[in-house]
Image 1 (cartoon, one colour):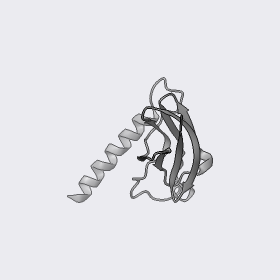
Image 2: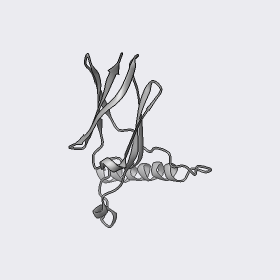
Image 3: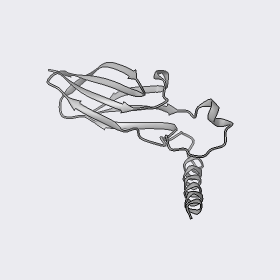
Image 4: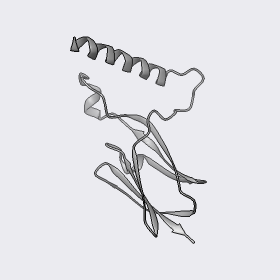
Length: 127
């Protein structure tokens, strides 16, 4: 019975991937997933932690956009995984984008560090 459930799950996942990559009239690559985030506020800054396993610093775009900050980029499949037999694929890959609404106030992008698969951003409070 478990094999049937696994087969149905794989078919569902294949259908979602097909719909994701073969959208009619879509020439621009749309984000396929949103990374999880944690947001902390101190008296001087806002701290944002974005989980990005397997994503290099050169693959990440960060921009302030009005009252939000946008973190975007792409997580590619590992090279070894391309020629391998696939048993499970749970870590998202492909284009990602996460728009994080900021609390009221003015902010300036401070430090950005990529450590152990997490992007750490500080937004310094202005005035």
